[in-house]
Amino acid sequence: MYLDDIKKDLKELLSEKRYEHTLGVEYTSACLALRYGADMEKARLAGALHDCAKYLSAGDKLSYCKKYGMPVSELERKNPELLHAKLGACFAYEKYGVSDPEVLSAITWHTTGKPNMGLLEKIVYIADYMEPNRNQAPDLKEVRRLAFQDLDECLRLILRDSVEYLSTKASAADPMTKKTWEYYQNLQEDKKED
Ligand code: FE
Ligand code: FE
Image 1: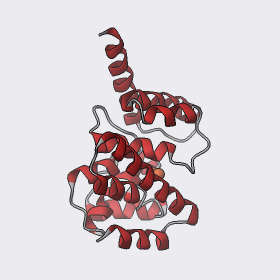
Image 2: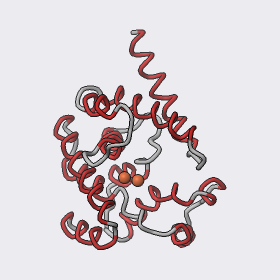
Image 3: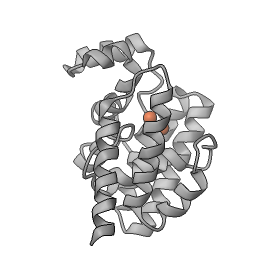
């Protein structure tokens, strides 16, 4: 499916606010792709589709996982919201005909990140956090500045703030977020030592 058709479909499915966020992630991903020489089409596609499964109810998320034969952890079963990223990649593939592994992986990891991310994964992760409609996160100004200067340092800051934020929340945090934070924290410390 072409990007324009995908966006038409998402406009129908997502709430107005979620759709605005989706457009924000799409064009912020495009800006970062310009800056870092990533593939423009892939960046826009991954940005547009990253939350494409977010509109599903918790129950529907679980039944789609069953349908696709996706393993669901104990934590995910209790917090089906965590599944929207992996399910988003399934939808991108099944429903929107996206088969590019980089795009699918960027969608899969947009919420938690993962150690040693590729360029497109980093771009969509960062764009999701800082797109222009976002206004809650601490250090947003610094994140937006760093995004165009040093991707790994930008990731380190986002992950530090995310781990801190998640630790204050009652709802569950995916352990991958902490793992990713530790990776980028160590990476940046090693760079300083060199
Ligand atoms: Fe998301
Ligand atoms: Fe999002």
